[in-house]
Amino acid sequence: MQDALNLPAKWDIYPGVDLGVLGKDFGIGAHIGARYFFTEKIGVFAEVGNNGSLGVSFNL
Image (tube, rainbow, N blue to C red; front, side, top):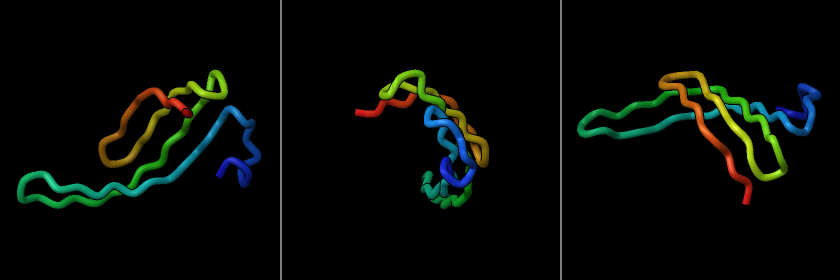
């Protein structure tokens, strides 16, 4: 989506699908996330959707 939105190289926006099983329950959902890279290898991300999350990204 970065090219379609003409974003700078440090930004990345992405959609996702969540599938999971916990005990007898099965869940499906969707989220959208954004990553920002401080360097070529290290960045942070945030996702909103079913559960949402925050974290750190590492490109190896």
